[in-house]
Length: 410
Ligand SMILES: NC(=[NH2+])NCCC[C@H](N)C(=O)O
Image (tube, rainbow, N blue to C red):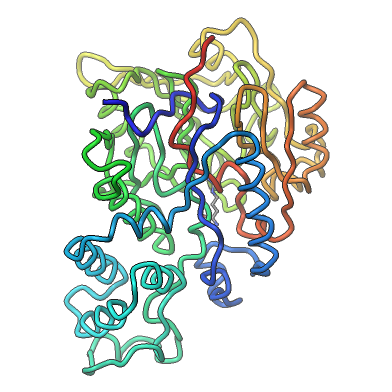
């Protein structure tokens, strides 16, 4: 049976992608909750939506089928029992396992049709919306002035992170911060219950029932047997070893994982904020992750007799050339490597390019220096508007989860 998921590179012609249009969850961020919800500012929703619609339009115009996360989840939850099970799990994961409030939340959310119920879960549930039937001791002891019973999920428009397609399967991720951990539950239900994926033998290489953390922004599919994974603020070495082991032991086709260490900070939270593949032999790289002579700590993982072998290397170019069997490659510096422009444009996701075909990418228009450099290196660049979307610290790669790319011919 043909798999509904097929992503054997970062650059094969993009056929199907999952997006989430920013919704009311964005307007439920306050200055106080901003840091915890992983935002640096509060986007103006109507403009963010307009920008996002334009992004989706560019993808459709270039031949990509665009699916929306909320529609996929809604279809997965048509069965009443599945819906009830999902609802209970999301309520539990919102901190109400064995709590008396659980029943009130359940009644409230169940009073809506499925799309509206999902909208409420995503945008967050305020205390004054729900009629609390009993006094829960745990709830009484929390900050009474905090307005939400269930927190908003403003990072949902970064569909890249809760799950990542790899070959004919995916990882459904245990994410790092509480603000995002519930997000991957949606993908679990889509894979198990949406008719597009259900009973189609989709491989889950690593599920979300783990303590060790990994996020899709760190998972780059370089070709049909090599992955690069960031060792980052969001992805731990343990999770990388674990997923490598699973991939090597399953018939995934993957036999090489390059773990690349990047600084652990908010601006560079994932590998794809500082390094992306945009052509067979071309990559964008933020110069700050490399030493002056192009060194960065990296480890190559391979299957071995006792599980996984690990070798340490430092020369990124050499590591990539060897793993991808290339004579040479072109590392294109963000912001042309300028000490002011590079960090400024990286901050607004100047390295976070989404390849929609070999040598063809979608980027934010505000990173005009990086875009110009890409064009000089022969890349076809589609620019999209970015004043509001960029405030969430994610660009075109973060805002898209490819589930189908054409296989490469070279
Ligand atoms: N793949 C990415 N770079 N995603 C960006 C995610 C940004 C989001 N605010 C977070 O901190 O989680």
